[in-house]
Image 1: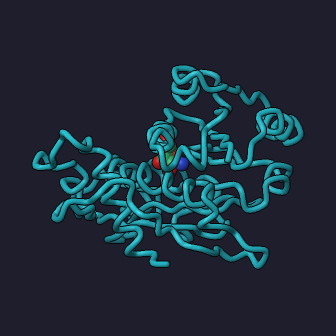
Image 2: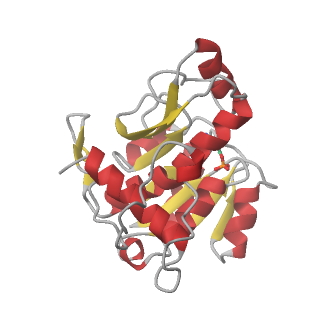
Amino acid sequence: MRIAVLASGGGSNLGALFTHFDDPRAAAVGSIVCVGSDKSDSGALVRARSRGVSALVISDHQDGVALRSLFHEHGVDLVVLAGYLKLLPAEIVSAWPGRVLNVHPALLPAFGGAGMYGSRVHTAVIASGARVSGATVHFVNEHYDRGAIAAQWPVPVYPRDTPADLASRVLQVEHRLLPLVAEAVCAGALSLGADGRVHGHMGLAPAHPVPPGVRFCLTENDLAPRASIDADTVDADSVARAAFAYDVARLYPR
Ligand code: GRF
C-alpha cells in the first residue's frame, strides 16, 4: 500500500513509521509516499524532505477536495494521522473507507475528543487519578477520536508523574504500536468491516528472533534494549521492536 502521513508537529511518530517501513517485511507491504502538514515549518515536513519523500503543505485543512486530489496524485491507499491536530474533511474519510488510522495518547474512549491533544490529555489523566494510561490506534470517522479502535497498549501512571513524564512514556509506546497497526492494515491482516467492527489480528510474527528475557514490559527501563543482546546480528532497537511485536501478538492472538 502507498501511505500518506499527516502530522502537525515534530513528527516523532512519522520517524517511527519511516524506521518501521525500512524493515524488509514491512517494506514488502507498504511505503510512505507523501507527508502532509498544516504547519509549513513542522518537523514532520523536515523529516519527509530529508528522506526525499513528497512534503505537502496543507494551506486549507478544511478543503477536502484539494487534499483528496493530492492523495490521488500520489496514488494513496492508506492515510495515517500521526499527531495531526485538524479534523479530517469528510471527503477523505469517505474516499478512503477503513483506510484512515489515527494515534491518540490515551486509552480511548476516555480522554479524547475535540480539544483533547498534547499535554491537555496527560494533565486530565493525572487529574483523574487513573493509574493506567496508554496509546490507542483507531480507524478514523467524521468525529474526533471516535472511530473503531484497532489496538491499544497500556502504560503505568506513577504518583509523581508530571504531564511531560506521562507524555514521554506514552509516546514511546505510540512509536511501537502505530507502525505495527499500519503494517497489519497494509498486509490485510487487520481491517474495518462494513459492520463498523475491526476484523483480523495484529499477530504479525516478529521480524527478528526474540531472545528469552528480552520482553517489552510497561516501564521505561524495559523499553531500553539490553546490552546483553548479541549486537553483531541484530541491532538492539530492532530486537526491542520485535519484542513488542511478540507481546502484541500474545495480547491479540489470531
Ligand atoms: C503524539 O503524542 C500523538 O499521539 C499526538 O500528538 C503527538 C505527536 O507527536 N496526537 P509527534 O509529532 O509524532 O512527535
